View: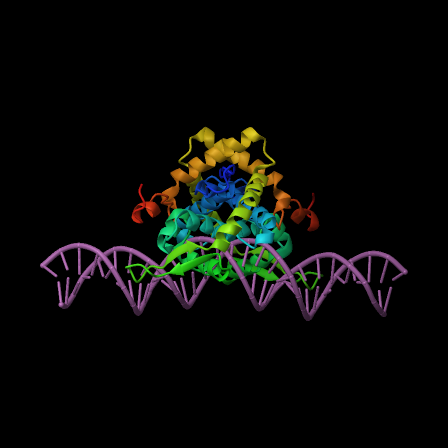
Length: 171
Length: 171
DNA sequence: GCCATATTGTCAGTATGCTGTCAATCAGCG
DNA sequence: CGCTGATTGACAGCATACTGACAATATGGC
């Protein structure tokens, strides 16, 4: 918490100890580790999450995909386009609704997913590795809790359930 | 930690429970809260950190600034330009070294800083508010520890000491 | 003083992220 | 059926971020 009882004395603690700054730093570090570990696959963290979600929810549309992984819809358009260009997913508008474009993973995408998942797991483990095992669990538990409780504070709150329900694929 | 003992069963847990995903979500939420609280000041989290650092290290150059707040040098160029356009900082190349451009905060910048700091503190507090006070401390302590231990993993490691030393302003 | 090397700021290119807008389309209501 | 309002995908514009490159400049060894 920044020390604010002396407004005229501004130190870098106002930055270094701020939660927001630590969240940003950690995000930068996490992305850096992810990209380094997965360099051979040329897949970013966002693309990975989208690919997993499309694999898990075949025939999902972009709007619902954005709710399932809590990414902005505007951003997601470009991500989808890149995944499509790489041949990892397909976009078909065979629905009754002529607006939506349904997303499915290709064989190539599923194959890449199988290969990259253990590598991603290694990257995820590396992010927490400097901490003692008990501290890793504590940190992840508190962070998961905080993210969940703050869910509505972001522009695109996570709506994990929506996808399956609206597609009528049993609850 | 993702459950990887069944490669053929891919669930969204591979995303939702991944540290990297939680770090990203938390960052999005933190920025969202910051921007919302500080809307009246038209200042982003990055611009705020840069402004604090320039205020704390008058006459710092862009490269050392990037080390002090651990932001990418390329990115920082645009940030500096925006702060300058807003009249919050000044850039002068009065050094012996014709390459460097020294940064100083303007009266207007210092004034804005005084006004925004308590608002930023409120935003920072709001990010952690859903947690119990004890849990907030635990989370911040572990995160600060993890960021510090992972410092070298990012492209621009934090070098908090560099600035003062290289400017010859006592150790 | 000269030259190999390093540093500084800048830029182009790519990839998230957000805000706001838009046309096309759909759904519901009268 | 026709109008209103909501939804969908797309886009423009701005702001981080990173990679890699570049010219100008500085520094060290000789």
